Length: 130
Image 1 (cartoon, one colour):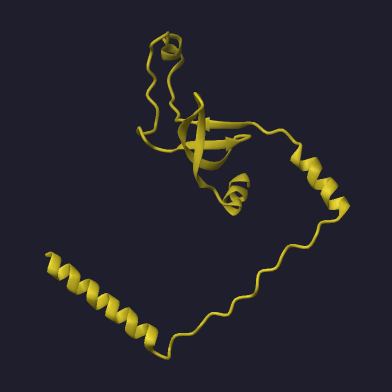
Image 2 (tube, helix red, strand yellow):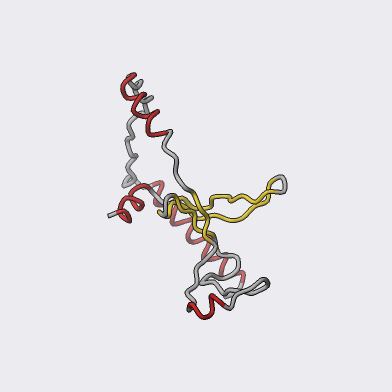
């Protein structure tokens, strides 16, 4: 496909969109006005504070591998274990063993960190718990 053909297709698509927007078949969606959440009661705040203080374990998983005990016993300093991931793939972020996000390694002030690139939705996390 030449650049002229691509531009003709683009121009045709733009004209089609303009025509669709100009027709009377277009309906405007009516949306409810967003409102601030109601204040929480002192009892609800106490319950929330209790939950917020529960410690959890967060871990980042680069990849996994299965090896035999024989090969495990042969590992020493400098050994390389092949993982099930390709270089550049995102890391898994787990909280108490449950996948909650994917991320990439970053270095901040000479310390490793992780930048979250994709957070798993609450619905998906709940489905995995069942």
